Amino acid sequence: MVKMATGLLSLLLGFSLLLTNPASASVPLDGLLANGNFEEPPKPTNLKKKVLVGKYALPKWEIDGLVEYISAGPQPGGMYFNVAHGVHAVRLGNEASISQTLKVKPGSLYALTFGASRTCAQEEVLRVLVPPEAGDLPMQTLYSSNGGDTYAWGFRATSATVKVTFHNPGVQEDPACGPLLDAIAIKELFPVYPTRDNLVRNPGFEEAPHRLLNSSHGVLLPPKQLDATSPLPGWIIESLKAVKFIDSNHFNVPVGKGAVELVAGRESAIAQIIRTVPNKLYSLSFTVGDARNGCQGSMMVEAFAGKETLKVPFASKGKGGFKKASFRFKAVSIRTRITFFSSFYHTKDYGALCGPILDEVKVSPVA
Image 1 (cartoon, helix red, strand yellow):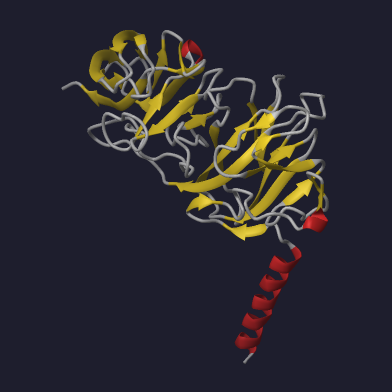
Image 2: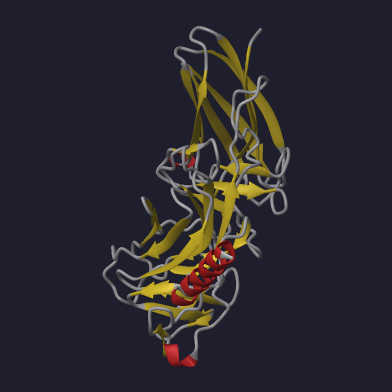
């Protein structure tokens, strides 16, 4: 009887918590957050023109500061907002934020995937926070021609519930500016390990962030991502610009379902630190090519391992070709960093950044 009463009390407390916190929701393993595409509209009483009024004015979300509920299309003042993943979006004014509390597994790695773009030509920044972690995403570089860029950002859960916040830190002082968010999803990422035959973790980029529905531009992996919380498990994004994850549904992928596109020349580098035996000889092999996305020209991927370097040229016609390359290196310590970047800059579609793709990275000891 006591056990039944205790269980009922716990149930009532849980129900009470959900009622008092409308911005709390359980997390899907792989999919949109609750009202993650903002298509569940606010009540008319919570909307003053475009401005959301009230802490819980946006269904399933908690807001702070000036947040606008945007419909795609022409805007007052001659602006035009493209909403790549639906019809509605939110715009964050200076120092404004939206938050949602999620149930997660402590210790697990998660990747948030979200559509984001700037609304003005000036410099804008989007800050993503899942305490104790936070990251600033510079929005001034447009990677797709329509401005509908999709990003991924990783975090490791430290408790059973986390509060996900998207914040405009107010780098750009113009109140009419501020980043636009149009879809937010999450995916639990599973641990990746080396094998006896391949010392590289996640060598074919198969363990990767969620791909938004109606998204055919790939997913940008922001600069300066550490391997412990990288949205592409095992890999470090150590460059000044993003690297793009691409999938086989929309792009040429030599093997499997995933690859990466090095979209910003020498400013777009991806790396991994592997365990090695000093003075032992290893073979590094990989595949380069083009994503079948119209990116044409003389491409070159540079690969680094130990004290060795290999430059792999590739003549792209933009139609999905690829080639394999390999070289040997001698390990100089118990840890060896392998790094890849594009030697040149490439553009397509009215200036959208693009570049060579990388897939099937393998490091194995030479017998």
